[in-house]
Image 1 (cartoon, rainbow, N blue to C red):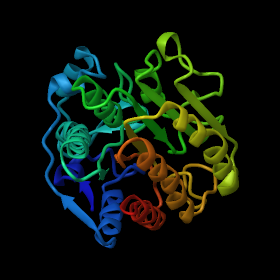
Image 2 (spheres, one colour):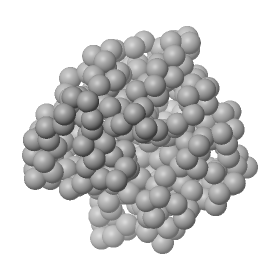
Image 3 (tube, helix red, strand yellow):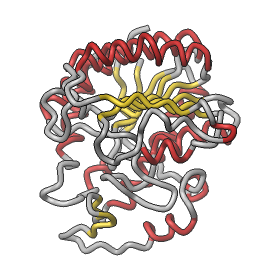
Image 4 (cartoon, rainbow, N blue to C red):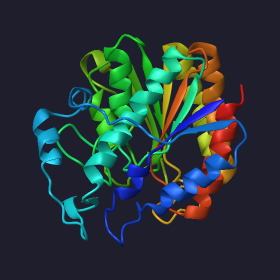
Amino acid sequence: MLTVFTDQAFYDHQPGRWHPESPARLDAVLDACKNVIGVQIISECRPARREEIELIHSPKYFDFINQIKAPPDEPIMIDPDTGFSAGSFEASVKAAGAVIGAVKLVFTSEGKRAFCAVRPPGHHAERDAGKGFCIFNNIAIGAAYALANGMAKKVAIVDWDVHHGNGTQNAFYGRSDVFYISLHQFPYYPGSGSANEKGEGDGLGYNLNLPMRSGSGDENYHHAFSTVIVPALDKYKPELIMISAGFDAHENDPLAGIELSSEMYGEMTRYLVNLANKHCHGRIISVLEGGYNMDVLKSCVKNHLKELIND
């Protein structure tokens, strides 16, 4: 059984009529969820508490987001790409809360896999700033929650969104208890993610970037997983694997040029399922990031979920 966490509040985040990160994305994702046997959907999430969000973000930033008063009909832009509407605060705290709920599920019940169908996405959000469509860093908050509450001593985050997760990298750059791995188009937004960014201090060697050229495609991603990611995670032996699951590296996504097939999302998932079964009692939490072609998004999510269900 795979548990999907979502909430009606995620539709109320309205970054702008022109914006590619639209509520229609959630329709596509939930359509995929409803068409996969073995999925149960939790349709209400508790909001993350302030102290949980502050595991990653500063008090000053939380106050800034909490105090924004957006008009009902037009978002406020908190950075050139990131809109904030009247419903964005509730959506943002519930998106982080969904991932915390998933962490609790995989460590305290028989359900060992979860997918968080959330908006807004999170992996670009920094300690003191929302960026790149992201307000709070949902996956980083979930990882920090698992560590702070003694559920795990080592967490791996694999980020296959086409854009580098600068916020997640920076949150754990000096720590060894989170191994952050990213495959992403490079050079590309947000400009970070070169191979020489390997962590610092206690975190040196626990930050692994695999920058990919435009047009890399399935073969190069298979090579990255089989020769680099799998051996690295076999050595690290995480107690939880988390996925920043962006689906915008697909060949028909409008925002990038990596050119993966829909099937590749199932194959990447299978690599991580095998690792989770080997090292973490099967525990995987996947968190929605990007993906902006609705038909493609539905197909890719369906392939992803089918592999998460399989043992």
